[in-house]
Length: 514
Image (tube, rainbow, N blue to C red; front, side):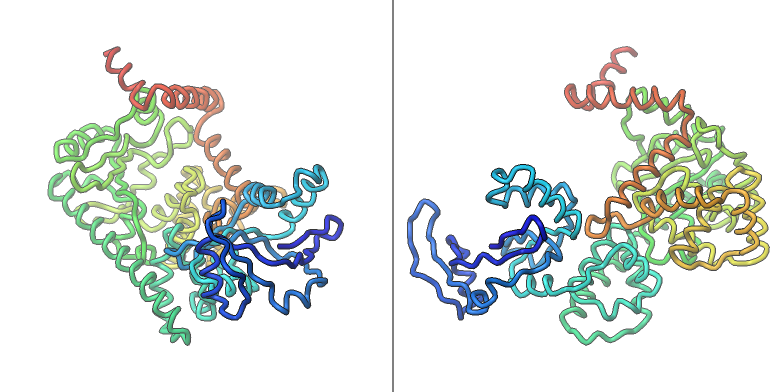
């Protein structure tokens, strides 16, 4: 226990016998056999109670003040080795206020003291089953931040010196970003021998399993593509694979360690209905949507509702354009599908079109849930196709399709995050068109948040603000205000009604009207 000086924010030891209840007393004697423990007071209203005498060191240091470096809320769980959770400022405030015995007595002074502490330091909750792991956590001088994750993604060899705790953080963050398998493949290529056998065993499990999952998903995607080609026959040659599925069949750099949520296909708009009917026949059924959402997909969007296979659970997104029609920015799709490359009885976009589509999907269609993975995909595509012809084509395509801003943003953040080599003359032309000190400062605020890792262990309030601004910008770019504002109110109204009347309310009403 400690006191906090409201003026200096220093912690002052409050040394006294420690009261432990039930299992806690047994654990302390197991972990610290040298401590002096009282006899057990059994069957009290708190259970079996013992008191532990503070150590000699605690008594000697009772007048020594300490600067608060972080706030940690520990919780014992016999089934958890060590889990670390970064707390938001709000979560940390609530827990500190709840655990401060005189918080209500101090009033405003107590409130302001807690605010100053949580604004100054990082706050964590840890779940543990071994106090030695807690000691290692408290002794850890540096925990990984978002910028460290990106640095390790660029140079996996740096991870050789990480502590076990930082390895745990790295694995959790990269798994959430769907980048763990890609990192694992590159790390294993380094053939680094780790001196800590415990860390090596930990990595063999987590990195090895991530690679197995990525390989299995790649095989699954290729199987589904082959099935589609078999079922559709000659008409499959009218389809173009997009994004992850395209990377997979091309076996390019972006396919390494890539994981997938669905298979994206592009078809001519006048062929969409016939492809949908055929896919329905072979087991891909449309996601149940109400009349409003169905209208959104079919009249305003660039795709129909997702189709899921009834037995395998695989999902197909069938597109007829790259961005929503309602946005007013849907390009002449012929610019992109020109010179498409035949592969696996279907097609993929040529390298410049593939790269630009990935940039448009990220920066205009606000695909930020895995923003770091998506910008890393773009970096790998650029690195693989770095030639004069490629740069001439991608600049021409971006200019003709009115996506030069999206290309500029992609190049800017590939350079900033991964030090990707780009064509400097192309970058200068795009910068001249889209960049200024004020604009770049705004882009950096927005996209450093949108493209940063999203795991709560490494994200911060500035990144969260940037992500929010990115989503607002994305929605505004995809819909004119005269459509966006009614759309927001309609969706909000329907969410409220469905909360009380059930998800099927509008579907039932729709059926009744029919």
